[in-house]
Image (cartoon, rainbow, N blue to C red; front, side, top):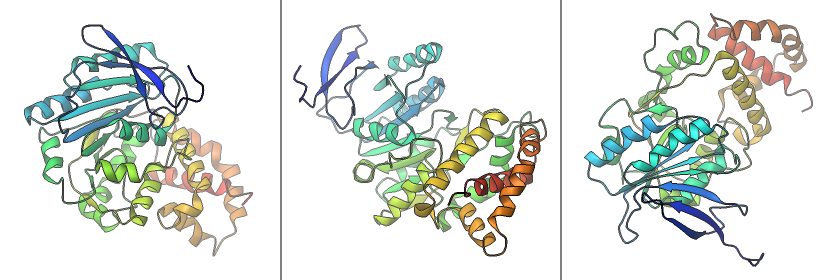
Length: 344
């Protein structure tokens, strides 16, 4: 094949096991590789798809989520599609379990050969979708209400972006020992639609939102963000700069999987490194940045860095233990971030 060609290829596996080799434009594939797509029922190209449900997944079985969404979409008699793209999972068991998505109507499941990152995977999903509206969902959530889809569609046309919010759910077994569950439950009153509406752009989260496809394509996620954290805040900032409108409603998804305390701390540290890397662009969009800016006026940063060196190991042991306290978690976040500023 001519190396100057901008066409790449992927295989579509239809339900009768036939294979078709089709070209893919450069905006979908950034490097020449083969992408394997398992597909059950393709939409008629002449039809108009109202909503595309798009879900990035990594090392997680999201078949229950997709099944629940499919049932709601079918019940609403919509022209729709469900697109799930796996961002380079290495678990054969997970990939096999998710391949059952292909058995659902109008659903596709794609496995990328390598991980492209949280921002890039969402841009790929948007470019792949055909619907007038895109409903982005994280893979580890589930819609608690049978009216989840219809509630979103009731607000289509009134704004550019609709954010439904997140619920921690009810799980007494996690209420004492799981740090992220305790964090989500404690701050839930600050994440209602009414509260989010006071700061619509800085309150934006990628977990559960619907957006006009035209707006999404004109304002892609910042692919400089390669690691965990703050790609959603940067996206909210971009929407504000472009004058896009955001409506916050109470149409939450429930978090279905809570990582261990060790994993949550590692993800928190990774997100703080992202925050530090993009601190100039996120100024005014982060409470932690606002706090550190105020503290700098009264106390030297060297004091916080010294405290971090002394306290980081005891704090980490506590936070990864069985009874983590949120006050100490917030202290750890502050000290860890301040430790990153040593070479500023």
